[in-house]
Image (cartoon, rainbow, N blue to C red):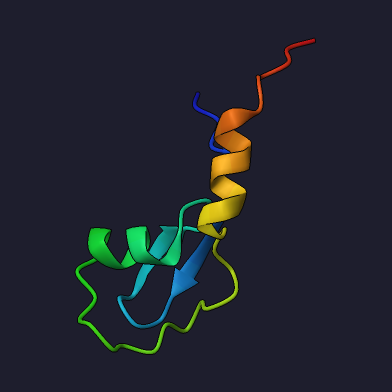
Length: 62
C-alpha cells in the first residue's frame, strides 16, 4: 500500500490531476501548458518564496 499526501487538484485545462505543492510555473512546464494560458488553478499553488522557506526549514520527526 502507498500513501500519497501531497496536495492535488484536477486541472480542467490539461484534464489531469496536478500537484499543487509546486509553483505554477513548474506545473506549467511539467504539463506543457502554452505561454499565456490562464491557469484554472491560479491561487492554488505555493509561491516560490514559500517553497524556499519550506526547503530551508529542517525536518522534525517525532
